[in-house]
Image (cartoon, rainbow, N blue to C red; front, side, top):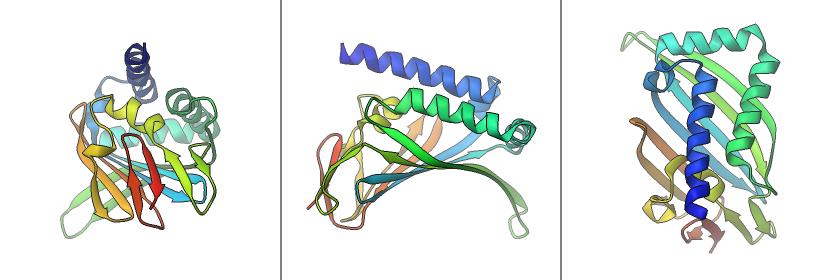
Length: 189
């Protein structure tokens, strides 16, 4: 039953991504994704930066510019439907578009940064929290990859680098104290 629910979520994620991009070329034009989740008390600060082709970036920015409030509202609804199980809430949303040209490399880097605070993934006390991560990892990576596939960059940071739908992805969990983990949970040592 759990596997069926996962496949349903993965199918929904595909529909969400496609509806956000409004074209089949959207996923192909993503160059890479970087997700960083930082623990602060019992809150998780979520940050996702998606690097785009210049053409897709311009299309996304145009949609955003037409109606900023609607763009963010639609994004939040899709994100909430995909990632926020009962008991999880996201607030303090922000979105920014960045196009940066390097004189040295003569290349333009285009990205969209989305940030929010996730409430409900942490339990326990501020001094001794226990964080759930399946809400993020299962929809993106499926059941094959869990925290045991992540590497400790430091004793306070877990990192995964791989590909999802042929797009490089990096997921980082960062905390203020040394951590331990099991398949989908992180806690302070």
